Length: 319
Image (tube, rainbow, N blue to C red):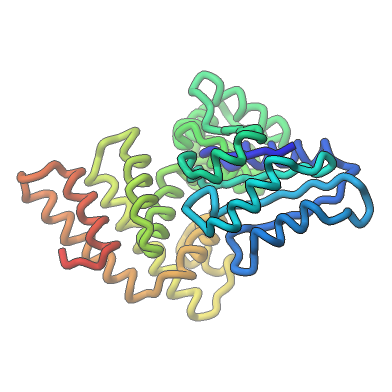
């Protein structure tokens, strides 16, 4: 069987992968990351066709297959399409992404899909989201007051992954979880999206950056609020970068920047792998300029001005 798994809810994709693994306990399991430089399509095909070491059955998990995202070497794609048109019965092949960026118009995607099951795992509708959140809390035996639960639920914007990340933090709290505890430890979907937006800008990924702007403004069309949130996150990044450069460990940084959320520090350090302190200051200066322009200009809508600002930053044009 061949599976193509995509969606915008990473935790659901994780659950699906776990389910597939549990259904293949008698198979050799091979994990491949197609985003790595040493990955090759030929190695994937060889892995599919080689005899297993301990079992006739084989489960191959291919994470972030780039050939479903952008046009790739035609000869390699022909080989992959040929295998997928006549797959080995004892081998299950799973392609999956956490980024929801498969290009369904690509020829290789259409060719593989002819013999595959496409599973899309997107966010729950509001009516079902609360039930799934309660189910997650029950599995982890986390108890919190109704008011605290409502604050957390509203902040996660129907993202089960963000809700689960908050449970990672709250699970460490030893006492009854009340509303004040949740507010002090809360990771909001906007906060995560803003970190991801900064990452996209640093990686010069215009498509993803504009998608994240759209995602953040979807709930509240408040460009000034987004600019303030971006500025706040950049200042937080600068603080973390300063203490990280001094050699402080995560727990020490948490104390110095006055946060109880280990996840916030880990997310910041992930961003800082591609962002220097002087670049943070440059981004803050540019953000101040566009903030002034948005507040004083009436030529274009605030959103249009902000999106043009993102485009210019990524393309290294002068504002």
